[in-house]
Image (cartoon, rainbow, N blue to C red; front, side, top):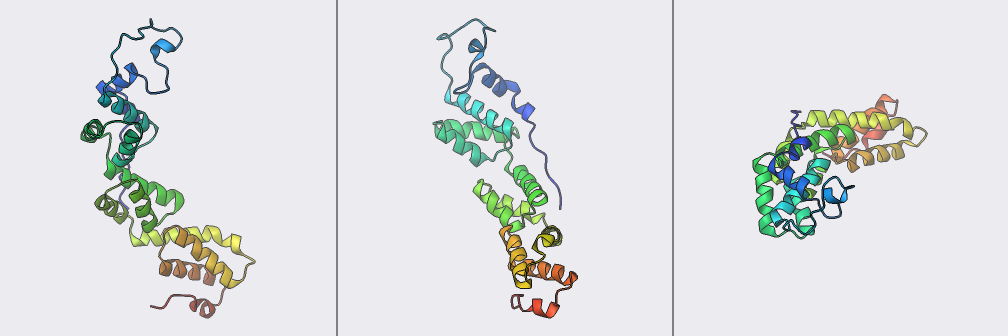
Amino acid sequence: MTRRTEWPCSEDAGSGAAGDAETRSPGPGRPGREDSGGFAPSRAGTEPPRTPEEQARAICLRLLTGSPRTRKQLGDALRQRGIPEEAAEEVLSRFEDVGLIDDAAFADAWVESRHRGRGLARRALARELRTKGVDSTLIDEAVGRLDAEQEETTARELVERKLRTTRGLDRDKRLRRLAGMLARKGYPEGLALRVVRRALEEEGEDPELLEQHLPEG
């Protein structure tokens, strides 16, 4: 699977005019420089209120410093904080132009991380990316880099790790439990049963008895 995991650096997010705007103007609930122990003379009431665009930039920068976000996630956050739609769209488009928002890179990194870390299959990965507002074309491209061979290899590794915890159960219960674990991670039923059946055969289970649990066709 081709890797594409480059993220915009969070340090870059705090530099430049947008970063300076955040430094000059504290976000809601955060003390400004004049409230931080007397490091600068108080200028309360002398600075004009921030514009919606400045507020939107500060919010987005704070969120992106924590972790990468999709455009939809940031847009939802701005809407929840009462940022006017026109100002939000202007800032989000600008962030896309400079690479601070990159849904394609987000999708690629999400697929690699969640497949390697959690063993999720393409179907489950696509479902997660949809909930984060990633465009369907970008989702297809990202999950398409996870080929069927790699998906099956991961499924076998998951079953091997889980297999020993099912020893002592009867054959049918072991098959259902292991196949169910794969199904919850998004693996198709046919693949799940085939992988589990092979693992149980290698442990000495009767292949003819296991065969009846495979789906027809």
